[in-house]
Length: 283
Ligand SMILES: Nc1ncnc2c1ncn2[C@@H]1O[C@H](COP(=O)(O)OP(=O)(O)OP(=O)(O)O)[C@@H](O)[C@H]1O
Ligand SMILES: [Mg+2]
Image 1 (cartoon, rainbow, N blue to C red):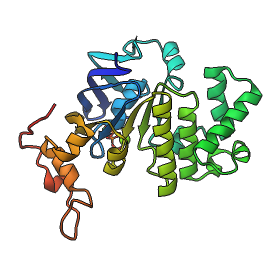
Image 2 (image 1 turned 180 degrees about the vertical axis):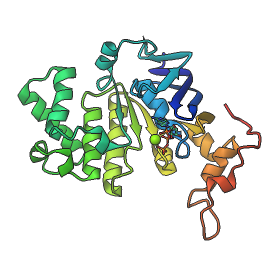
Image 3 (image 1 turned 120 degrees about the vertical axis):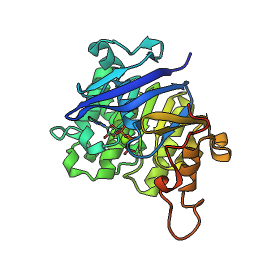
Image 4 (image 1 turned 120 degrees about the horizontal axis):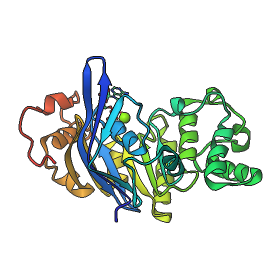
């Protein structure tokens, strides 16, 4: 049985100009110990589809699916109380906007210790010890002192690392990492990716990695989903995707990489891909 299974997910936002379909029939599966990458240009519905799975979209979003099951539990129609038990513990997410996701009114130490208190029931001393360990793991210097800081006293990259520490605090069965390393410099990026991959192998954690970085995809993913305008254009194991991409859109995405581009200027996806043409291999 897959760890997460989603069939035909549709997300529609109510907007002042009428309904807007951000996700249009996406299906996916992730097994324990597997890394699934989701790639696709900005606005293709990557974050929205995963926020829908987490149950974290605002009320203006109408979410429907034929099936949405996590670890044997039906997420569709699940009570808010039951979701709160799962979210942040067995299924957690590194959000794309780290600063907006932290509460400005509380110290980062309080925020990570709350997760450990609520989900794992650790006492004060054990919480502090684990929080320090987690801050160390994500490369936050002087972790004991940092626990007493508020988000506004930290840089964007540091907030992102706090978010990552919170997301992995309870050793989740499934981690959704939404552009987890974009605000970080390359050495920290590598440390974070190594840490996520270690968790994935040691705890058989399922990992959904949303990224624009095809280098990260090549290094980490087992399978890749390519999304475009809320639809799945292609799904393939990582080798096949790079060696023999099926859809024109994936070919355009790969051709737009600095290493593959020819000439002085990088082509845009728009120049390389005409959505009005029929796409072979579209899912
Ligand atoms: N709360 C909302 N209300 C209305 N539209 C929204 C809302 N949130 C997202 N959208 C729209 O849904 C579409 C998909 O957004 P989403 O954030 O999933 O894109 P993405 O693929 O994650 O892009 P990026 O790579 O830039 O993070 C976009 O057109 C976005 O404007
Ligand atoms: Mg996004």
